[in-house]
Image (cartoon, rainbow, N blue to C red; front, side):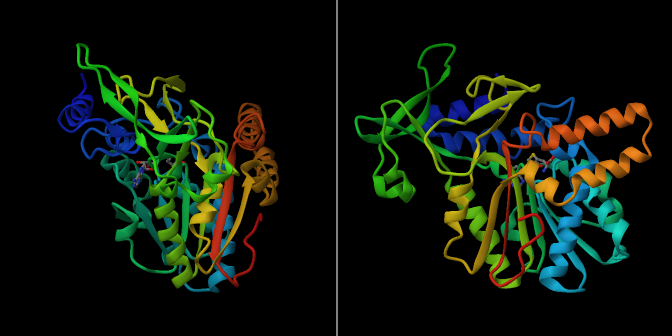
Length: 360
Ligand code: SAH
């Protein structure tokens, strides 16, 4: 049994069943044994691959987006960029390359990185050392400065709660432990949930026996805290993630190991666990702030509108035949509906009154 599995099973043994939210946070963010702190997760040799690891074009386009949005919201003061969940540091490196191609801001860029994994922090350090980034363990520790927030595949890693429909009521879905060897983990039902503790629009959804509904207070609190910063200081937020436009019923919790689906409860901590982002719930969470919410639009649409095909054409001009093939296939993967183009969505948030950011 891995140390993390031991931690989880001991907690259940001592205190009783735990929520899916508690399980996800232990698996992903346990300070010592959590998935992000202990494994090489991202990239061809890891468990999953993200857009910046597919092609430099992704980060370059986001860099140009950030620069234009900064100028729209701020004029010519020093650029400040804050990435949340920077992975291997590839996205920020590509962003900065693009920014440097079109400006001489070089020494005037402030980079903040929010990262929980010490292991990934070391990789980020190696890639970004010349830019002297500052690291923060959580959003609440960030300075209250004007900045452009960027989060690619971060929200899907924040924990969710699940409820299961039964006889016109919703019951909390929890994780428990068998009493006999090999003490397996299993899903169980907790007490019925008061309808007023669930997101308000669940009232419009039909309760069907056995159906699962997912929601995430943690994601809503996170987006609200970012939106409040934008409301007070200006700047903008750009979020890219996989998920759905509208709140809906259905289970999306999934574990992935070596690019393959993996059982959520088996060997916790050796696979990545995520759930799709409900973009409507993010929009609802910030609806009382003095901000505008743009999107969601698909990643394919967004990247096309901000010019990724022109960038690819430019790279293709100087490429030999093998790199040309790579560029073409990466472009397709990023924007094609059969790749990441449809499933991944993009949203932006700016202070009310600022111009519409590029792509929306
Ligand atoms: N944006 C990167 C990595 C995505 S993976 C890319 O596109 O390649 C998710 C990232 O978020 C990892 O860097 C992980 O360590 C970080 N992370 C996950 N949960 C976090 C949390 N609660 N606080 C800060 N960082 C977190």
